[in-house]
Picture 1 (cartoon, helix red, strand yellow):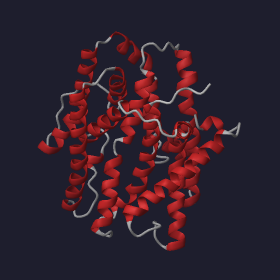
Picture 2 (tube, one colour):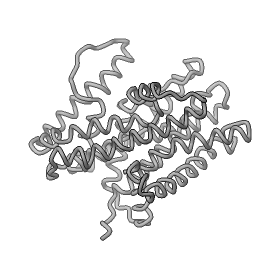
Picture 3 (cartoon, one colour):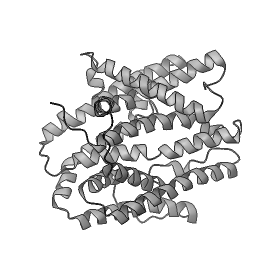
Length: 342
């Protein structure tokens, strides 16, 4: 029996595409001095628009997995959840390392082990390391969500916001190195935030405020990145892109709340099909994007289909997203390989 579609299915699909979109735009951000200002601003705007995607992925996981009504033994947790992430992490680390080693003609088992332990096999796999760390905390976090009141959860989220986003912002602007420390993990806050936003009713005035803050944060991200890069003599200034900056957090909150209260109902079967491959798309897309741009450069001498990056970024992202979907679907149909895409 097919389960009813909900707004979070749409959100997962949009988030998966936003990741591909972000990574399609990102490489050109380092070409400030060689691109036209219009083209550089195109990728800056596109990347800024998409910065919320990774926080929302964490928030979606926390929203569903921290439900206190879920009952799981530690054995089930590790065999059903942790291993379903650990196996893909190891498998895709090997795949990406071999791919990189072939390109550079430099393979070493010692280097692979070092890169795997240091999270240096490929740029996007860091997400799985963090997610595994959050998964092993699920039993403890469920004890908190089972016992904590709404006010207590807000208190935890406030402490998290003070500890990392706010403290790092103050350190940057005031040129300080504040030692005061509240031992709350960086991405742990997104896990709890997702559960909170899904569980509790958000008043209409608060929703409107979140949308306003989200739009202001988008402007801050675009403009701050542009000015910072300009003042940095064209060297990319990524301060406002960091996932734990207040501006990115406010964008993520606005997107999550918007979809929570949306009543989307178009193409439900199509959305659920893509949603079922969203994690596979995340795992696959980086290799396809890297190979696509490499082959394109070898044929045309540059790494884009269209000289206008407003157009190029959208078209390439759609191509990579679509191909990633079919590759993920194909892999999951092969008995030996299906476990590397949960």
